[in-house]
Amino acid sequence: MLRQAFALVLTLLLAACQSGGLGASGNSPYGVDPNKQDVDGLLVGHRLMAAGEYELALKAYYRAAAEQGMNSDTLSAIGSADLALGRVGQAEDVLRRAIKADPTFVPALNNLGVVLMNEGKPGEARVMFQQAFALDSGQSDAIRENLRLAIAQSEAAVYDPDQEEKPVMKLVRRGQGTYDLLSEL
Image (tube, rainbow, N blue to C red; front, top):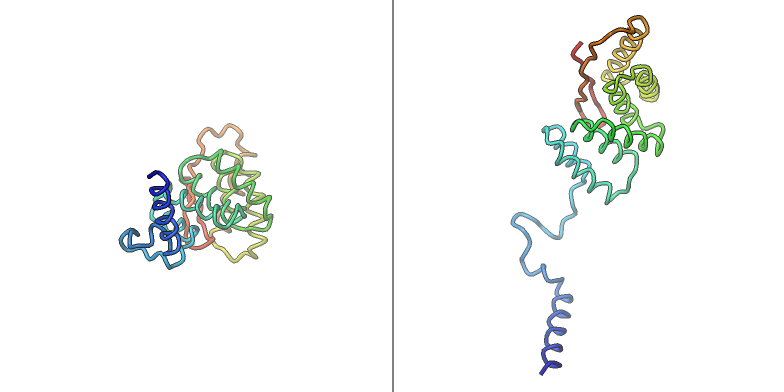
């Protein structure tokens, strides 16, 4: 009796595997076509960032990293989501890893500059923005503006060391690989 039950279960499992799996019989969620390829996690994350859904964007970026690997693009995206969530220390660590993976990746350099500005390190931020500006050949107005703010703030720090009020910096995505640094000066 036990052998017959085992044989029946084994036969059903083999039949399910041959027919495309246990979920292939129409058990997919509504609106999901199991035959289509997944949407790129980076694209989904960028759209969620634009919508202000930073936690969901971070999850999408992690999914992209699982699919594509931890390359400079996914690390930079994760770092920008961490920054938007106020996790400045984590953002700095991840963005430094992105730059280590590709020292010429402009969005990672720009985002690290934003993080450094938020941490009150305008001199180091200035270096990051200068590198991003040079690699971008001055094409991005946002990077030019970020560099201008970093230069102004680093020079102000030299001339006014008792400056107590630190400006609040905010990273705003303006397109694929384009970011603006907004300041309340």
